[in-house]
Image 1: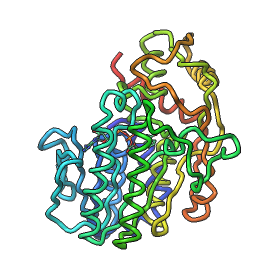
Image 2: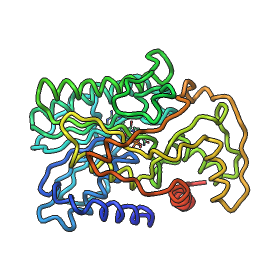
Image 3: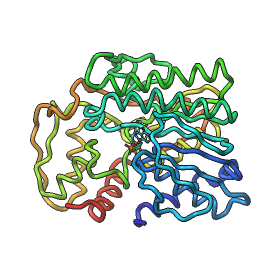
Length: 345
Ligand SMILES: NC(=O)c1ccc[n+]([C@@H]2O[C@H](COP(=O)([O-])OP(=O)(O)OC[C@H]3O[C@@H](n4cnc5c(N)ncnc54)[C@H](O)[C@@H]3O)[C@@H](O)[C@H]2O)c1
């Protein structure tokens, strides 16, 4: 395992130790477990097991796992499964964390139907398992469900209803996440399942796949290869970004403290920066010279992107005592140091 992962894992465990006991003796099922966010959950739960009186029994599912994967740990079962297909789990489950999804615009543009399937069929399959087991159900939705909010709804609160195009190139992702949320609402209201919805806002950090094509891996791999960075569109679109250790802490707080049926924005509410400003930070933290050019959105990347995205996190602060700590420049340095050692270029 890489050093930065270890540091981040230690930080997450330190910041969540007070309530880690809640997970003791729980059977947890996590989907999307071979993804960027899923891998952190596995590591943190296995780290908790070093001090919990009764260990967590974790079932980790991902469509990309190879059979009989690397982990040799009696408290961890790793299953290669497509959650959008019929799903049977032959054990009692206390908590389900549904993080499987096709999250990168580059990939969901190539696989729109699979993107719908994992979020609609997958969520329904897993909600049925939650219902049978009376398990808590945590759904990874997205800030994308807000679409392109008008300026009076930025920073965006959880009760904003969104401005989403059902017919555009991003619709498979945005609309399926919206329907996934509706499924959570139905299972919560009609079948008494304890559901919580997490809407992450641009999480980044070590562990992002170099072929992910989201903004930071795109910048990092091109810098490392001495390529000119391509900025799509005007470069004026703004986002806030959340470092992975802060995000995982927020997600764990939702699992522990989330109130029944509630939705939580998890992200940083500042700084809200443009792609142009991100480029300047990358210039500052890299010792070598880097260059950028402005291009039209390539065919592989869906245009129609939101102009601004920034969460209002007051509810997460109030209900979960959630406080992100890592500054953007600090987080990008950690990520870039990790990328230098781990990406192939
Ligand atoms: N990272 C972010 O900034 C962000 C922001 C908003 C929402 N989210 C959501 O959080 C979740 C995790 O995001 P991530 O960044 O780790 O993405 P990721 O792409 O790194 O991981 C997702 C994982 O889901 C798996 N998967 C996809 N379809 C599957 C299926 N049918 N059955 C089983 N596994 C399947 C993939 O193989 C992958 O390992 C996703 O649902 C994503 O939509 C992430």
